[in-house]
Image 1 (cartoon, rainbow, N blue to C red):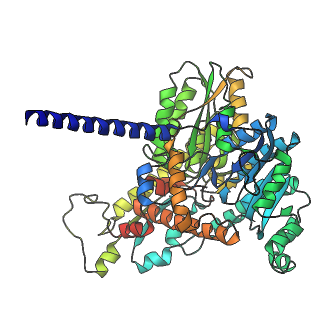
Image 2 (tube, rainbow, N blue to C red):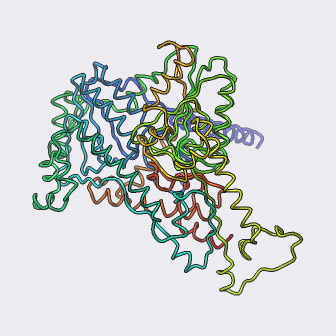
Length: 633
């Protein structure tokens, strides 16, 4: 028995040891998968293939792997605009790359500034006599802003193209809130500050409508000018002035209509398109599938060419303020005020820091978070470190608040900026409570006791104090802008009041110093710091996203795609994506009302930011939960 017992212990020990070894191997394999980076060795002679699925953004949103896996929904693919530009510029001078292929079958969209920058990079590739080819089933405005710069634009015979122009509808909830007996208390300053109008009106005010017409008119002119310059033979006026007659002239065949109008160059399926690319870039020795051609994917190509930021000891820092500005550590992809301020404060003590560029792509948000970022930037100026701000697609309201700490502001004609105004929204439920027999009463030692009371309603004193706080915050905003732009507060007020401006108008109004992007801002800062070309590095602040971000996106996307039919790319699929964007706007508006996030400097007129809603990133509650929250306060 003693021998058997000892033998059993040995067997159990071996079993436990094997279990531990297998567990160790499993976690090592999992770590290797999550830590995997693209292999530069995958780059080969042929075409550079860019699968432009999803959105083009300023800064990728960090993926919460547990939330994503539990939800089972695929996070949209996001491409940083600067990565695409870097890849295209590298392809232009890389002898291995014979052509560039941009697959826009499931492209959703991007901001006008980003897409124009990518288009200009496509032009630089073509100047080296390397063709750029695009393929899609359905082309919309954002597709065409890129495709106009291509050598050959291909569309599927079952697809087509439609150009809608900027603009559209916002959602208004005044009648709904009235039926629900929700009293929406609004505090704002600015005739044009329309971010609160959805909660108190059923249509835009005359001032807001005037501002929208001016803004979208300017953006539409810029879009047309850029597309016509890149594609002079395009019959754009015919396509946009009477789209029904244009389509009917081709018997309803959208693909044929697009071909005849010059929106696309050739019609063909993927096999025919691939055969054409193979004629230029060479056949694929690794695959015998129809339409295969020699190619290198974007990720390994970027890994091969490197970051391209220089290797000097002098750093010009770049910090990104992208997405809605919120309090706390949110981000990247959402501009958490504390997170960004900490990034700036941690880097300021480095002796190698010679300058700072702040890249802004935000419609604004929390005033407190905006001010937290502005103060952190101001600390650089206090140390005589030159600071420039570069505006991307949107730098409005809180996005402009942040920029008032800069020495110089750069923007593009298509940039949306201004919206200098503030507001706050607080729903109360005294009428809804009375309808179901609930009342509130008690003893107050001062007029402020128990206030703000969302069931009994707000006292006149609290109402006046809240409005005074918003008015004072607006005065602070005017003071920051006046000091930054060398104007009087009274002058700023005449161009503020919440009004939104395009980049061209903003430059004329002295809200922006000059046209240019991040490169121009970096060059200006280098000049102010006395650095010669090649004697400085551009260094982005913030940790690199974990590699599991892309892995989780791929795993969940492949699992969710068949059920959701997300791979569709025709015009009806594009309409379906717009429906999803509408649902996102509903959730965002409900969150803004239910969340009561404090005084806001936020731009409603600004087009919805590409990529997932910042609100849903910060707090993942669905629409019905948000509506329920209104009644659970």
